[in-house]
Image (tube, rainbow, N blue to C red):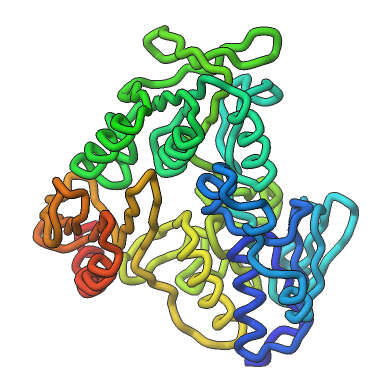
Length: 395
């Protein structure tokens, strides 16, 4: 197979940059263009809710590569010009400024957009956290506020709550689940996270839905719960997940269902690929379509797509992985922590908050979780890898 003469990467994200770097590392010498909707060069998102939000890092430190490293990639970088349409037949992307960019291979790496509550847009003191500019705007408000309400008890909401408490802000976390990250890690670990947040001063108002934000003269003053109760707030952060950024693809003819739907090679159509948070691909060993929103997948999937573009025919079938840091807890998750799974502590001690938990469903190991035991949990990843096929038969 002859490599394409031109590759266009749409999305100046971690997965987009990793695709460019993987192509060059593997010897690709053709033309590469990266198109991004933000004015910034590619940066890392995980530090936004922690190091950047807390002020421990200057914003520039979140940049993924120095300008010299980007220049060494011999690629054309276009920032601040969003893609608005794709013609997969001619493989042409149109941008807001009127550009028409053509390539023999196009990689979609546009990520997700944060969901919002009704009436949130334009409301002073109401935030989401996805971009670098989001993080800087939220930090500025946190430094001047006294009461923050975090709407959302998932990974991002829990990280924001933890960071805000380290800044001395009065924090309340709310959402429909009974404990932080209950959907991601199950009742045992989410209960421990709830205890940790409570000990550090986060008020937990969980197990209840949120109706919307309350404003006074265009500024947020509270969060209204489904019970009718209003949680007072000077600042509110809505962290209720994201929707794949595919609105620019609605007329493309690509299959768009909770992301860009791809085959096991992350191919959405001939010459069209997707990577990172926006990609929903067929995982052959799991036997189903999956979409992963985490930094590790962004890097691994980008390398896999680079291989396919250069002629290799190999499915992408990783063991899912994510991590989170909250206060002094460092949690790593390998595999799938199924709802209703049996949980066994196989290393360490829960009371010491240093342990590894193994998750079983119908006798099959589906995942492992490490709490302040990264090396031990990584070693047990092999148990998950060995059971992927058996896990697929249960779906």
